[in-house]
Length: 321
Ligand code: UT7
Image (cartoon, rainbow, N blue to C red; front, side):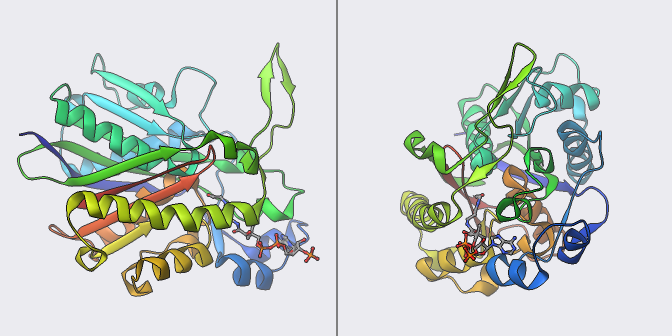
């Protein structure tokens, strides 16, 4: 039986950290105290003008490829989770394939599930690999959310950041992905969306992220708890069997409420929201790479990743590293 497992991770954050006080200095009507108390965010990274999603994805991917010590030409599947692609088309995954110099190498496509994007993309890669159709996948979450923020809307612009995380997943005899589940309920689309588009060369509607923060908060805590139980039950395991929980990094209060619901203490939760803000599809692979590189997550660690985001979408992946 074919399984899939993560053999290496990588990540990339653009530029220097931008603190809450830096945002105040830029004229945003907020304070370090409000942002820290309500969200736990202290700083985030913002890509310079002209830096694209595929550029961040390339930097993270090169680190993962180096850590895996594999020839990029052997990668036969590239999936980029993003809601802030370089262009309407081609996909950021195809652009990433070109940036990495991989030619005629199987499939490359984007997955658009906003902050659940990485859980979706990893689930798709696992299914491709277990089907036997592909052997080595590069799965990336990459975002330049700063491009879709209304910098006059203090209720949203302070929350997000830019970055990318990547993993190499390959066919293996020992299971790495133990269970996964992905879900959607499109009827919740109005509470978190970018309600505009480009048509006939003109922006139609509102091109910025809009959110009902409190509705999102409640929804997120409920589904993050439910989907964690779903994958654990599927694998025949309990929360006590999980070494590290990596929820999507939206707000420290959402992480704390989710951990409490699951009966997991915060010292088993990888937390980056204080330093990265909410990087949407990039937040989980960024946190995973950090905890792999600082030695918290090692070979054999059991890790539960879970995301929730616009759509609404949500999902979880239970891993043995
Ligand atoms: O990936 C998923 C994406 N999103 C999320 O996960 C977000 C989920 N929601 C949240 O994290 C929280 O709802 C927020 C952090 C967005 C907001 O926190 P809250 O405790 O729900 O605050 P609120 O929206 O109820 O606003 C409270 C007050 C308001 O003032 P009044 O009406 O009480 O006078 C806001 O105008 O805080 C004010 N406020 C701010 N003040 C200073 C809103 N944003 C700011 C700000 N700085 N940046």
